[in-house]
Length: 407
Image (cartoon, rainbow, N blue to C red; front, side, top):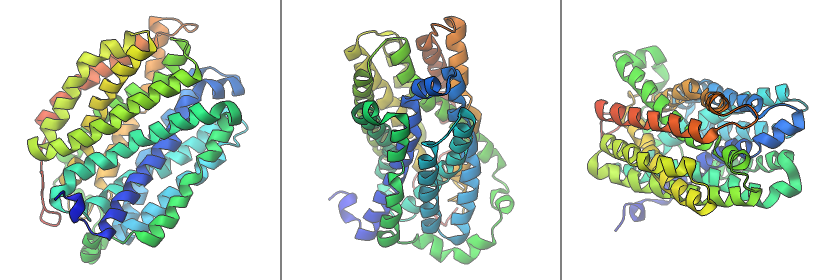
């Protein structure tokens, strides 16, 4: 009998809600990725100017991770998760009505606060609710929500964009607000949090992290590499396919669907594998195996070849990421499990938030402003961070299957 078959109904609802929260969060985020050029054309600016909307979203995520994490550690995982989902849905809808690029960027920054809060809260709720033996597979499942959201954005882009435009897509992006109703009616509060409620409320961030400063610094550096790894292979890839390869909306959408299926499979595979070979080894193996796919992913020209290479690459990228939710939760100091994973993750995002402008600048320098060489920029950045990730993962600590409350 599988671990999933032994879960109770409440545990299944928790995992489903956490998965859907991250999937719909990613869906809202990646809508921007598919329409960068159209937004630039609408506002009369270059694509590089619009990439600052992505940068601001990523840069503000640590603020949300801290605020919603502290709310979750003090008042419960469930209300903090509902608040995060509701806020990012409102900001997504508001983005559809931005009258200028400046307003659009401000709204995406506010969206980033809400987006930053969802991951850490949802992950802590899930891992505090499922059996220890199920953590690896649940980690892969939760992280699979991210490429699932990207996949959903690709489908919406392919089916609806030509009919409703980029503003209409952001209106569709308000749909995740309905998830709040499901969480409110079906998802119970974390029993681990309830049992430690008095202790958790009395714990400040400084006292909770005392003696763990090196761990926190390591986790931030690790998550910086992770975020360069994912965003470096995702954010400007559709732009490269459109401007450098000249592919149509339909072709780009189909390629994105293929590589996000690979990403979902990779997260599930390596998340599960990490329970057998360890969290660090699973991360290092996936990052190392991404390297051979990079030249084909960056420099192939036929749509089928690119789709195959992208499937393999994202299988490995999100394979490494499939270990992250459980790894960070197991490393977290007791009493900060809703704050620590999300906060170090999003601080890494803050540092990596310059990825899109960095890759755009590299593309301009290697090519020209009229014909940027995105293939060179994306391949170079991803090769460097993959190697860094292998080293960082193998050098770091691991607390596989630690029992929460015993650290």
